[in-house]
Image (cartoon, rainbow, N blue to C red; front, side, top):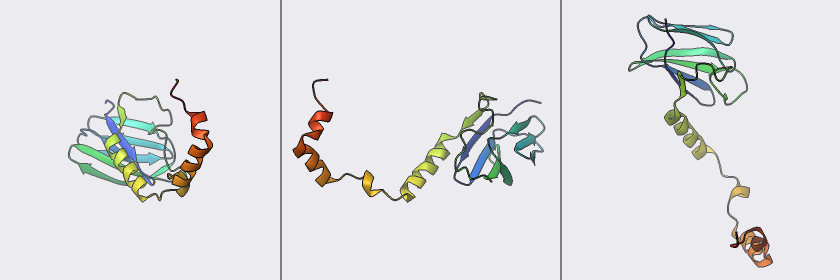
Length: 139
């Protein structure tokens, strides 16, 4: 048995793991923070970053998708595995899906008025010469 290539991404509630080019008879087991997977060619038993429950499994093209529900209050996992460097050549982040999630989240986040450009404040800084003290063309 060998270790499969894995692609993963997350959102606020779920972790999505894609076993790339899975083989016949996939089986998934959960034991505490460990995710165990096996099929006719691959197998692994991984300690994941935080606690989770198995939400669903499905087949998407040639990939086997495992969707886990986060159970801790952590909104984002720093990595898929507790030991970040383990199997790093086999596990990658699906940046396309993750970036799409971040863009959707950004659209739904209201802008903070304090972070927006304020013309009146800018004019006061110009008149008082504060911007000249901060920035110069001499550098």
